[in-house]
Length: 337
Ligand code: AHG
Ligand code: MN
Ligand code: MN
Image (cartoon, rainbow, N blue to C red; front, side):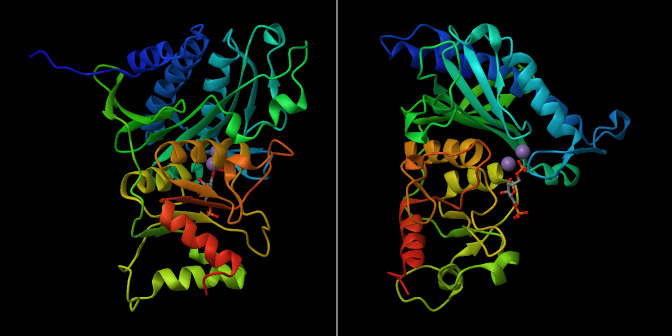
């Protein structure tokens, strides 16, 4: 049988040809991420095996004050071990590292900076629920021999590309370079990611809302009203909504991309900026959702327009179908009561 398929590497290479000044560096970098994704995917699949003892929590606390689990560390070091040797990168920002990793030999010739959440949803590892990796790539702006604060803290509008990998019932790699969003499913037999979701588009409106309602008492009145509206069964004009909340951002986001609706991690009285991180969770997914026709906001402002002040900054996140995100914004501003 002569099957016709496209692999992720082929698509990245073909995509690069569309940019006249392309040097092959971006393609090279994406191929390195791809190798790390396969390594992490394999390890995630084996995580249930107690023989490899990978589910035990370590004693390390990460910069967010959370207990790091072994797979977080494994994912972080797998990506860094490969990417630190990349000639294309000058710096790596990771959720698991307090400070950015500057790659000394590459400060002049490495033209890209990578920000990543190596393993998202890690509290779901030991219950066999989907987890993921999120990343974004930006260009070094300065030409000197240092990686400056401005190089590291760039608005999402400046991204060159972003993606996520979901380790679920299958492993799926979704990325965009600003020219559509494409998804690839790992064929474990071939060891290749095959194009499975070409040119993904998020529905303009969906009927699923996704939020941790355990935080209800901590929300603002406007936030409470928004969710109460979604729960109402007697709306004259809208269909009823269903609630879905996995607790792995990548998994909740992937479902939202495919089915439409809204994912929210709002501010609350003990977390005034919510929980999620701007640089390596909100911005990459905002870039992807916008490239698929959706929207991402902190409730008041487009995520991609927010200028980061520090690498581990948190931000409230409202992301998904255009109409659903606009509706949430109207509740937050008090326009919709
Ligand atoms: P991480 O595992 O990278 O620290 O991220 C966890 C995040 C995210 O995946 C998810 O959306 C959120 O935590 C869930 O938070 P709550 O448990 O507060 O709902
Ligand atoms: Mn995360
Ligand atoms: Mn993480």
